Image (tube, rainbow, N blue to C red; front, side, top):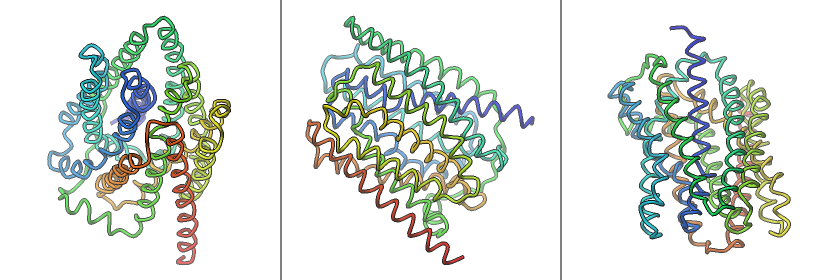
Amino acid sequence: MNYKKEYKKYLASSVLDTANNKIVSSSFISAFAIYLGLRDFAIGIYVLLDTMTNVIQIFAAPLFSKIGQSKKVVLINYSIYRISSVCFAIIPFISDNLSIRTIYFFIFASIYAITGEMGYITFVNWRMTLLKKEDRAKFASTRNAIKNTIVLAFSLIMGVVLNQFTLNNHELYGFIILFFIVFIISLIDICLKVFTYKPEIIQEKIKIKDNIIIPAKDKKFRRVLVTCGLNRFAYGMGTMYLNVFLLRYLKINYIYYSILNVILNLTDAFSSKFWSAKSKERKWEKLILPMSILFIAAFTILFSIDNSYLIYFLPIVYILLGFGNSSYEIFDNIAIYENSKDRMQTSYVTFERFIEGIVTIFLPILSHTILSENTNIIKITFAISIIFYIILFVYFIRTNKLSEEEI
């Protein structure tokens, strides 16, 4: 195996994969859901669906340990995952009925989310097994920088295209172009993965019970687990209705919406190397504490400023979100894997994703008790997010002091 050659293949594939995830995640697909007429609550569930289905990852490690993480099986699953992401495009041609549209929307979204979760852990495990330890932070920051540059250009172009088609009363045609581009990127990504080296995975066959108990009892891993859980709850609550808030209630156009996504990804890209450098000493408070402050500031602006003026502050909000997202991505790519036991990395990653899924399931339940189709009620979700990021900030300071005392 040529390490440099395979490194480049993994990097290219990971860039395409994560870029596609950004494109078909909560931004433009939420805009498409609004075009279809879906209700706020349904769109909020969709935004969280990808994380909610993390619960099934607890079954992924035992499953793939039994079949040896077969490349053929993994690629078939991945192909279904990518194809389902473009199936949304046929919904407007099926029916004009809102209930039927909502059902089909969630059928495709569920297939996309579930197959994504089943395949996620294998590609991460292959990549982390192949990469040298000293290359992991560099890989994550380089991938994020390239990925966000691609998404940046795509978002800006698609914003102009969608806005132009909307002005001409052909909004659907703009979305069809979007899904066609997603299909082409997916096809290239799948072909690249077919010819990418699959490293030998040394892992004993494990049971679902062991997959839960071993990571759960690991005290060293607990701090990482609590951090991820609190962040997922706070971030999920703050962003589940953000796209609806912007497009349906603030009524911003697609060009401004795209510019905001450009700002988000540009900030994410430029800050990746900064956060990567901060993480070299493996002191995670250098990532989590600033991240918490950034998210608190972003959601405070969304919550506190009147809607008539808020539109002018949105670029600042998205800059803060970009810095925060980049910080957490570096943490997520390194801390979870390096705080797991040898040969148990797959179990640790899937258990962490399982906890994120459990936490996220409570978000729609909580939001449904406070939410009506009203912009002021949506603002309450921003306030809840602020509270939980404050809790995360205090927790990290307290546990950091305890760790220093033990040393």
